[in-house]
Amino acid sequence: MGCVQLTNEAVGVLASHCSNLSAINLHQCTNLLDAAVLSLAEHCPNLLYLCLSHCSQLTDASLIVLAQRCHQLHTLEVACCSQFTDTGFQALARNCRLLAKLDLEECVLITDATLIHLAMGCPRLEKLSLSHCELITDEGVRQLGTSPCAAEHLTVLDLDNCPLITDASLDHLISCHNLQRIELFDCQLITRIGIRRLRNFLPNIKVHAYFAPATPPPSSTNARTRYCR
View 1: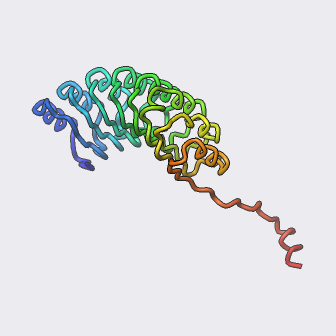
View 2: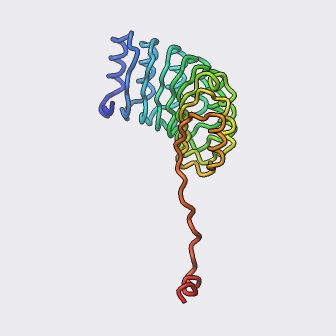
């Protein structure tokens, strides 16, 4: 984790000699390219846990090769992999149906299309982070909320800093009976009323949200002068 000097060649050697590898954490190994993930996928098809967070040079090619070869994948962490798009996650959702935990924080290019693919292809999804995925809208959450994973498995959903999310998203989640926690920090269109309505259906849910105090409009110089009189 954080071995910034780690090379693609080193990962390739490791993968070729550890074919039974089931978990690897490459967090913040910022020099890695798609070739490193290709080596892992080719030699370690039994991977269950993979962390590639902050490996910002990776592209959809990495997700596609994982989808082709690592069908047992259970947990994938790819926070701040800013080049990943809906195309890569579509491939992943079609082939990695055992995925239960996904961290997509700051995968800034993904849209509702990714949620549609996950809803259809990942029926065991338990924990999903979409923090700072600013293109996600209520429609994506609607697709997720009506998916097979929602009613049976989804326990944690992170939507903080998703500026297009509104109270409608909370309404779409009322059928997620196992949802234990939702993160809504800096979702400016979420209201207390919407949260209260969600809690009417899910009374035990933990909602983490922050409501900034209303900012008064800036006063003009003349207005301040009149006030001071």
